[in-house]
Image (cartoon, rainbow, N blue to C red; front, side):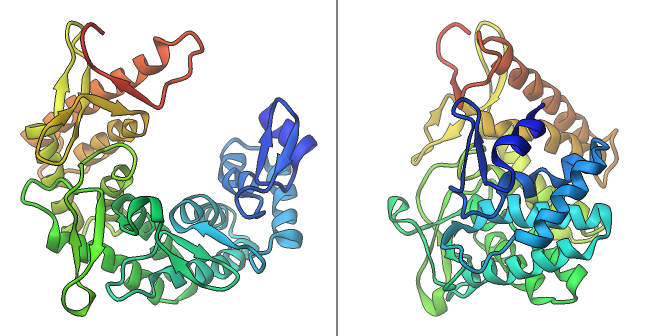
Length: 332
């Protein structure tokens, strides 16, 4: 139903507006919905639709005239979409387009520290961080590109994609606090453009979330051999259980609070934090100590509890659509 409407009213456009039935190019005119949906079409057995979309990618997709885009959003949606389509189908059209896009996005990594700027102009290669964030780097954006670039490096033989993007986690590993909980903003400063964490909140919602997700997934992607990623994940999960994990009253819903500057907890959970159910389960089932270890049992129990809370975030609304975040204060 959704793809039928997209094809009829906005095929090749970035977005379909369902009420006005109009398509817009607010994501740079790169067919973002189409590219992001390629793997879904394949996995759902919609092969005719997949190959029709492939033809559009082959004949019309171009990144040459695209201006400023979010490096993070474009990596996970457009670059990731092209790479997953290539992985599933083996069609080199997708890899060629991915390499073209990756090379343009990758100019964001040309910084003193090696951290990628948040926004990059695909046409000119100029990159910058956002004024609204004090020109700081956002930890979730910098640390949520490595899976895509590592795959692109392997598929193309261009190792720089992997080496430069992996440096982000090398930096984070050196400056992460003992509790494993990352602050959401990073700055460059000191000798040789060294990086440091600014005093800001720690969150598993916006601006923090997927940095943790990529710790465990990078470890799995690398064949469970790169210990740094697993150690960072396990340290962070200890921090979650010791500092952030809460239960509401009177209903006992499990949630992950935000920690504000100074250590005070903000008893809210973003919908974005619902990735933690799956990530904790993945970590538990791949725990080097085994699924029967105390750590794996703890993490799997928390995974189930958080997933139930996230279900309730949908079930308790009249529309059946979850809000952006939920405040846990008073009765709930």
